[in-house]
Length: 160
Image (tube, rainbow, N blue to C red):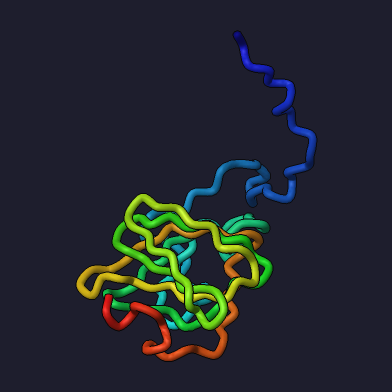
């Protein structure tokens, strides 16, 4: 049975994405040419592969985040942005909830959704190896840093 392709007909105007040549085409960011000029949360190294900073994208931020061994972010949220993450390598923990009493742990191959305006702390559980995430946000990489909490107030963090 042939798929019904009629529902995929172009109904909108994508001319705003025209390149200087006038062509509407995919835009490739080559490895090593990602944009490092993006918001952070105290030590998380974020680079964008697709963002308003260096592509025609206006409703999407997609990048790679690297956390050094034993790293934890400052308390923050991502404003109105919905955030999706994928653990590319390493072991991660996200603290959340009232007084950051709750957490979820993740490992390579796990996906996570972080709702808008949710204060949280991102952690690398491994004291010896980096943690690498692929992260996407819409509309862009919004990072709102908040008053931080001490390590000793994070359940199971010092004894990990």
